[in-house]
Length: 143
Image (cartoon, rainbow, N blue to C red; front, side, top):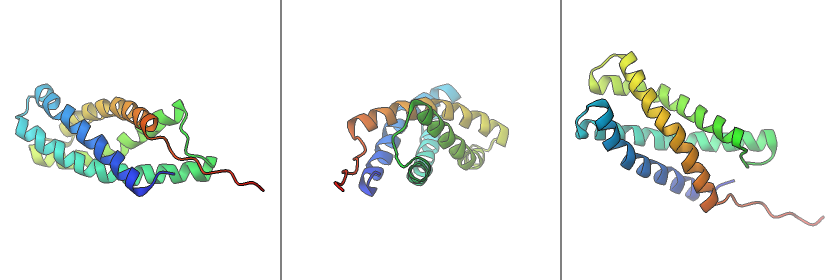
C-alpha cells in the first residue's frame, strides 16, 4: 500500500497538472472568462484533491480485502477511473450550477465534459505515476 506522503504527492501532482491543462482549455471550450474557469478549476481541484485521497485509500483497501493486492489490471484501471469521475460528478454539479448561475442540467453537461477529459487524464496520469513511483511490495518472510 502507498504511504500517506505518497498519496499526498499523488493527489497534488494530479490536480496541479490537471488544472494547468483544463483552465485555459475549459475557458476556450465553454466560452467563459479565464477567471471564472479558474475559480471553477481551483474549487473543483480542491474538492477533487480531498476526493482523490479518500477514494484511492478506499479503493486500495477494497482491493486488499478482495484480492490481497493493490496491483491494477487494465480493466481495474478503467473501473477505478470511471468510478472516481462518477463520484466527483455528484460532488461538483451543484457548486458549478450555483457559481455560474446556471441550471443543474447545464452544469451537468459542463461537468460531464470535464469528467470525460479527466477520465482519460486520470488513466494516463495514474499509469505514469505507478511507473515512476511503483507501489512498494511487502517482503516475503521465510517460514
